[in-house]
Image 1 (cartoon, rainbow, N blue to C red):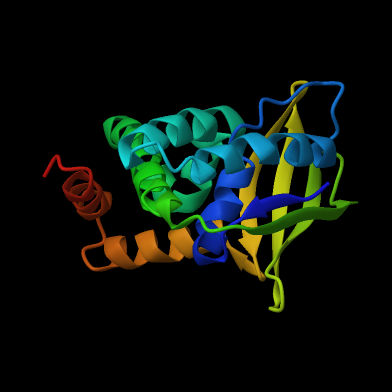
Image 2 (image 1 turned 90 degrees about the vertical axis):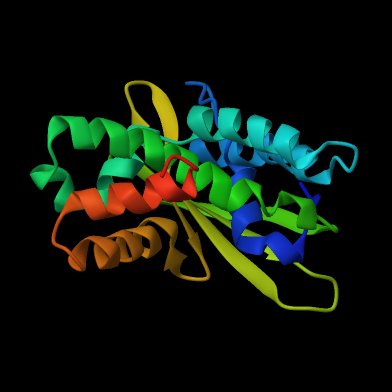
Amino acid sequence: MTYFVSRHILAPMAIVLGLVASALAAEDPKQMIERLGGEAIGIAADSDAELAEKQEKFERLFQEGFDVPLVARIVLGRYWRVATPAQQEEYSSLFHRYIVATYASRLNAYSGQTFEITGDQRLNDQEVMVKSVIKEPGGPSLKVDWRVLERNGENRIVDVIVEGVSMVITHRSEFASVIGQTGNVESLLERLRAQAGQG
């Protein structure tokens, strides 16, 4: 199956393609990503929708498709264990808003390319890597892999790897750099509050 997406939002669009992943037990991870790609693309392709409307839809799909609490903890890494319960709670909320704002703001760059599922690979008893490509006519293809966790009868996306670059690792490095300047999780919370308009 082929869909149309934008090369100008390749990495962000790659994230969006799996956001509506409301996993059904009857679907395997590859079918889930393929089936729901069309709906996610529709958000980006809707030229009549304002950015705020797209962001609202994007946020719903992100929360539905990704294991948000798990991704938030993985991204924070070892600093999750040293954060207080109050800091963990605030961070999880701010992380959600940060990711949505980061990627949804780029949805208006939609112009139309192709998205195809190319296969999948079983990583272990609970995880599958779904492989896809974004193609540009006359141009190079972009490899996008989806790490899907199968747990409690549901499939949830826990990472997206674009041309070998992991979303989780990228944000973990970014956050660790911020925390490393002071050695305190509060410095990251301050940064995320400011980006969310709370600081």
